[in-house]
Image (tube, rainbow, N blue to C red; front, side, top):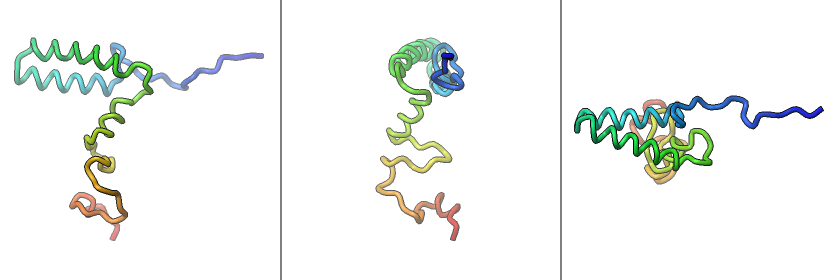
Length: 104
């Protein structure tokens, strides 16, 4: 007996070919731009950004954009600071944010 085994157990939710996080990034950029510049220029930039993201993420795993942004040095709340922002990681925190949650 030979049965097909799916490659992934659950497929990610895709909106217009992009993941929800990618659509949220495009929406934030387009929405912020429309407040500053009007609807035409950010709308065109959002469409171009959608095409660029589709090409950028081709043959990449799900969640690749957030991992790539983290590797570029963008800090996300709840994660340790990216390696581009700190010289080295240590046991004891040196920033006020880390000292607030230290177990001393």
